[in-house]
Image (cartoon, rainbow, N blue to C red; front, side, top):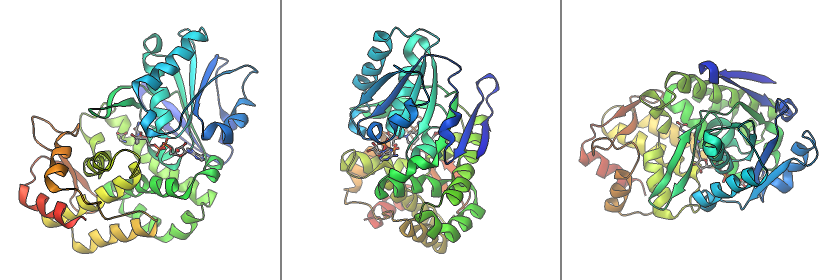
Length: 351
Ligand code: NAD
Ligand code: GLY
């Protein structure tokens, strides 16, 4: 087992990584509400409940990004209220990023904030969404438009839970893994290239090292910039392009991780057009993503629509689009100085 700490003063918390770490769940004797969905619950809820007092409350939501709404958060809040939970209640999220974001948001607002524990069950949620305290729901006007920063008290990344994850979801998680390498760790990129066969076989030992390396990077960035005033935005590499792809295609058609994979290649392509990254490095990134079964070509979206969707991104500041680009591969930067021509070229070349 591996353990890391997210250092946030009084709000610091451990991330335990490895097969079987579910047994390290520490409720501190508090009453809890377990939140999951109707796909994950039949697979893994029983194992979790076996560790909790009989009669522990549960709230099982319908599966899917379409249900990451204020209404679903309301269902969790109703369950907390109906169960008579007070300030000392504890929410446990058992699921992927959708459940983690929803349960975390409900925990953030119930009684103005109660404790919660993340038990991520997808690769994406293990390496990204369960760490860092971003919680929230979607709104018709935008993804994750409503939310709160609320750190979990414990994160348990039990690799055994990944055994049931469908291949497409597993690949989507790998996009966020590659993101950490592309934004700041070329040695990790070398390692991912070398370990691709073991990663495709979901080898637990190799996975443990990989998840630890990702969480270590995320923990360091979150500790330095919890509220995204600066460097935390680097974690959005590929996301401004990706969110536009997700929105244009309709949520759920292209998975978040798939959109991030395509978005990273677009960010690399634009960096190349700006003279910041070599063509060899753009191809290197694309090859690795493809080897990990990820798409790298953008679905057909008219450039005007693409640009309009990018303008809606949360990273737009004073009406200027800010992008995370590579200067070079392995070193991400945030820039608001992107001339329109190369951006147009990237959009046209992406499909
Ligand atoms: P998800 O939660 O929808 O899970 C993907 C699918 O896998 C779902 O159908 C789910 O039911 C199923 N599943 C989950 N675990 C399983 C298991 N062990 N076995 C079988 N099936 C399983 O999606 P995701 O990719 O985990 O997360 C995406 C969400 O995370 C998006 O809403 C995104 O906005 C959010 N996100 C949040 C942050 C953050 O910092 N809070 C970061 C990145 C992404
Ligand atoms: N997934 C981006 C962040 O947590 O900041």
